[in-house]
Image (cartoon, rainbow, N blue to C red; front, side, top):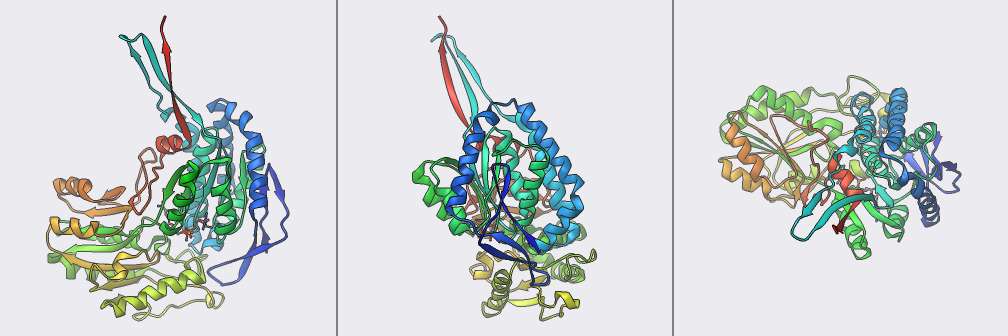
Amino acid sequence: MITVQNFINGQFEKSEKFIDSHNPATGEVWALIPDSGSQEVDDAVTAAEAAFPAWSALDYSDRARYLFKIADIIDERLEEFALAESKDQGKPVKLARTMDIPRASHNFRTFAQAWQHLVETANVVKEQGVINYSVRHPIGIAGLISPWNLPLYLLSFKIAPAIMAGNTVVCKPSEMTSVTAWMLCQVCQQAGLPQGVVNMVFGYGHTVGEAIVTHPQVRVISFTGSTGVGQHIARTAAPLMKKISLELGGKNAAVIFDDADLDKCVQGVVRSSFLNQGEICLCTSRIFVQEGIYEKFVEKYVEEAGKLKTGDPLNEENFLGAVNSKIHYDKVQSYVKLAETEGGTIVLGENTKSLELVEENKNGWFVPPTIITGLPDSSRCMQEEIFGPVVCVTSFTTEQQVIQRVNNTRYGLCASVWSENVGRIHRMGLKLEVGTVWANCWLKRCLDMPFGGCKDSGTGREGTRHSLEAFTEEKTVCVQIF
Ligand code: NAD
């Protein structure tokens, strides 16, 4: 059994109270997570405050050296990290090995080089004889709060830019998936990162998370998680005048036009629907298919999704592992039941094919790919974030109609468009109310581009330049030329 410890001022601290962390694939407790409170947050903030002057005074290239070292050690410990991420979150170990962990080290490397993207401007106003220039400086202590679905990947996407910009940080990963964050603290220690630059306090959101958000010395909050918690953080932090970045939920659509390359599109949409058990904020959860190809698409989509294996995340053949927790399993299943009462037909799912699980996974929380047709756009299944391997498919008539229907949701995270018509792709790109539009692909994005949502999917923009801007303040200096 792993016992996770808080990491404060470069030291691992013993705790007295713990939270059970379950392996979603077996249902067993596999790690104990500190059940910390505001005292530990205070200690972490004190450490971060003490570390800030020296850390922020370093040159970018000196800070970058630490980030490169951290990336190298993560790579050296790839297999260990991948296994822990799989046991913690339920994801297939193969996915952790090929996506989550390499992306975490990539985040550190990318931000180690990305400081060149920070734009500072200069302007000489000849008539007034004044030179204006802007400078960016670190804000101070950043509070970083992350969710359970891509534990190391998303946390490192916050830590790397925050410390690279010269801030020191107090982090809180999800209480359900804290093990790889604790391992990252070991890596920081191994890399010789100065004490207090990265502090990690483990525990629940309503205790540790709340204490970070309300702490007067924490001047910037970067949060990724659900829209409900994001709204609460916005309400709490706004009167305290903190800089806030919120990356929240989604209800992402795939739009398939009748001129799409159907084989490629089916492969792409199967992946976007079910990768990581549908537990990626960017996964497709509504599919709109143009009426002429609707029957053909559904037949192929169901056939391909039906080939995906669900089960033991350690078995390299399984495409889907377990969903993250019992609570989440119950939530996902409640939507599958709801779909029937809302008039939907389950064309693929547990009712069509039973799961074959090995003995040790019998108490795990597994949901196979589930496809529902026939739901009205206004149904809860078409409007609310399910965040599991459950997708609703419907048909549409015209481009204009589908734009309205895709936009008919409170969320605005991303969408994918499948068509061979380049003009149509650009029109859709401009008219869909989302932060990212993919065309004939999914999840391919250069980190230099802004990432984030609109509407209830959040206010943040992450990416090399955008994250560094989010973790810095800009000042204008106006100098009179005598
Ligand atoms: P969540 O909102 O329940 O929790 C996220 C984090 O916030 C956790 O660490 C949690 O402990 C903490 N928290 C909870 N209450 C808090 C409070 N009162 N104050 C401060 N912190 C608090 O989300 P989750 O269930 O962990 O993650 C799933 C959600 O995250 C989904 O909605 C998904 O779409 C979203 N998500 C969004 C993105 C994105 O980039 N937009 C990426 C991944 C996940």
